[in-house]
Every structure is written in structure tokens, then in C-alpha cells.
Image (tube, rainbow, N blue to C red; front, side, top):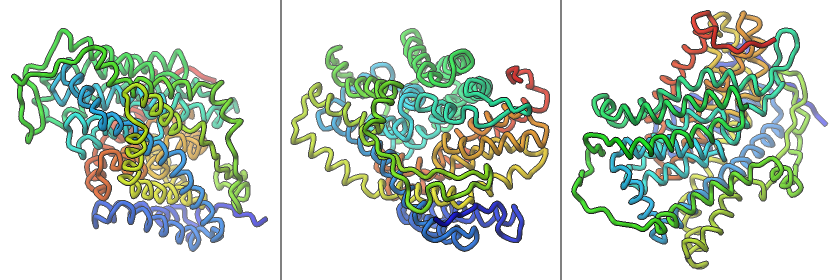
Length: 549
């Protein structure tokens, strides 16, 4: 079988010129979506086609390889990513169809009518819990839909949830982004860098961001004056999350930081609301504030039944992701070797063959766990089989274009990776010399923007981070952790994330507006992490790096 060796600098034997070519699909995507305002599906399709052409013409990838890699990405875009979105929105719409979402809304507004606090409870704390339990798009899809149901405008709901999702991404899906690179990179003496060590280092970077995100989130919504009005809630929400994130990541490993931190934050914020309320109730400008409006009085049983879909969802996802259960599900998974490219692409970084396997794991997929939760919910909220089936079909019809968009953008990501374009971009950043200390986090940001996954970005660049760090005198543990920490800020602008969020709140076709909302915040947060990493590397905060070989 024909082999293809990725070329690191195929154009003019220059890594910078080659990187400029590799940047073309990314620049095109941003300009087409935000500048020319093309529809999301059309932007995704044309970006994918452009990436295929560049991979073949400039990076010398065989046409059959480029098409196979794209096909693998499109398949992955539907399962598991698209499957999660479909089932998440379906579960939410079941609660709307039966009227139970009205009770959910009333129960949240009984705690507070204030949009600032609602965003903290739903987007930040509950979203982080879902990220820790499931990841892969489910948190933004579910929380954005909840906020829309509470009365948030779709654009704000989606944008705020994408922004709030920054804090937990590095430890999402029960720590997979960290555990996936256990031992992948090494110290100078050859000792593998363990997932436990990486988690500890990330836990000395991200809590600073986690503390800041609630303040930043509310500032974007309401401005400085209205942000300062709710500083106790912001401090409790972000502070409790940050503290729990540090403790759990440094003393318990990479699996539980999100789940524990989000629960601590949620409980602490609700407890605060029992003894403190904002002086004024803030809502969006075009909303009426009805302080004296009589609130419906629901029984505890009604409230519990209304929230039961998400209680059941949490329990099912937790069970689904337990190691023994995941091992059991492997018996039903089918690993399909992708034709042409499986073990026939030689990495330009590791110089080893790259496995190309599509895991057809319908039973073990997170989306299936959400569907199981929906079936259990059917008996609790008492929706008929006919209405349930009708709701599923309605949900699919509403988001089918979004599902197609997701398939296109994941296909684009896969051909970028398989052709070596992503490695070339990473190498260009790594070639910045001493400046790499500051820009190492941007490597993770780039990887997550392209792939939509902190896990993928870590797998792509962890080894490159380590090698480059040793060349420029940077601690390799710090560099590997910086990749994960920087990556979390790229999630909110990833084409996949934008498509997922747009689908969840009915903004299909308006992805450009959502990208405009998030892009500047992504860059601001990235620069903050870059500054933290640089300070940890250059002496000011070097005491924060854990002792290691």
C-alpha cells in the first residue's frame, strides 16, 4: 500500500511560507463567515474543499488519502458529535412539549430573576458539570437551550455558554484531555510526564482564569457598574470553583476536577442566595422588570419532576463514563480501519505511522446515554410515545442543516491534521525561539480552533511542546500544560463549537454573529493565559511549577 509522509515545510523549504499556505483555510473560514456572512453550512463546505485542494497541491497528499481523511472527519462529525446535539436538543424539547420547562424556569426565577445570577448558575456552574461528565458539545447545547427557555436572547445564550465553557474544558469528559497524553511527552532525562503531573500543573494555571471568568461573563452582559453590584455572587461562584479546581487537580488527579468544582460552585452560589440578593434585578434592555409580579407556586414534587430529565441525564452520563461500563461497551464497538490512510500516513513530528480508525460505538456514545435518559424521562414526565416520536422528528428537521455543517467542519479539521498542515502551523509557532515561552499557549489555542477538541490538540502538540520547550530553556511540564490551558480559550471560536451552539438555540444560518461575539473574548482570555505561563516560566511565578525529575 502506498505511504504518505507528511511534509513539515513543503513550500520553498520554508516552515513560515508553508505555514502561511496552511493558514489559508482558517483565514478563509473566518472571512467567509464573519466578513461575507456566508451561511454556516456553505462556509463549512467551501472551507473543507479548499483544505482538500491545498493538501493535495501544496502538501503533496495523495487525492485518495485526502478524501479518505475528510470522509473520516465527516463521519466523526455525525457520530459522536452530531448525535450528542440531536439527543440533547431532543431531551430539552420534550420538557418544553409537556410544559415542564415552564416549571424549571419558575424554579430558577424563584431563586433569582436576575439574568446575571442565572448565567452563573446555568452557564458557568451547571455547564461545567456537564463538561466534566460528558463534554463533546453537550454542555453548550443543553445550557444554551436552558437559557433561551428562561428568556435569554439566543445569541447571548449561546455566546455566554461558549464563554463560560472556558473554565472546565481542560478536564472535560472525566479528564480525557489530560489522561489521553499520559506519558506522551518526557522530561530531559527521558522520564515520561504523567497525566497526574500535567493535571497538577494545569491546576496551577486555570484556577486563575476560573476565578476571572464569572466577572468577565457578567461584565460582557451588563457592564462594569452592574457587575460590581453582584460581586459577592461572582466571588463565591468563581472563587469556590477555582479553589476546588486547584485542590482536586493537585491532590486527586485529572478525572474529577470539573465534576467536583462545578458542584461546589453550584451549592455555594445557591447557599449565598439564601442570605443575599442583588439590590436591583437586572435584565436585558428590552425586557420588562416585573418585581411585583406574582410567581407561580409549584410543589416540591412538581419541581423535582420538572428537573428530573437533567437529574436522570446526569446519573446516566455518570454511569456511562465509568471505567467498567466503558470497558463493557467496548464489546459492542466496531473499530473500522479507514481505507487508504490507516497506518499509511507518517507523522512529520513523531515520524511514526498514524492510525486512522473510525470507532463505530453507537451504544457507548454519549449521545446514546442522553437518548436513554430521554426514554427514562418519558415515563416520569408522562409524554406519549406519539408525541415523543413527533418531537424527535421535529428536532431533527430543525437542526439537520446544523448537523451537516458540523460534518463539514470536522471533515476540514481531519484533512488539515492528516495532511500535516496542522503540524506545520505548530512548527512555525515553535520556531519563534525564546518568544515561544509566551506563545506556547497559542499552540493549544490553534489546535482546538482547528479540531474543536482540547484532547485532539493535546495529542497533536504535546510532544512538539516538550521538544521545543527543551530547545528554548522552558520547563517541558509547563509547556505541555500550557497547551491544554491555552486550548480552552480556542473552544469558543472553533467552527464545531459555533455550529453546535447555533444549532442548540435556533441560530442556524447566523453563525457569523456568534463568531463575532466570541472571537475577541477568545483572544483576550488567551493573552491572559499566555501571560500566566510566561510569568511561570521566567521566574516571577516559577514557584508554582510542581517539583519533578
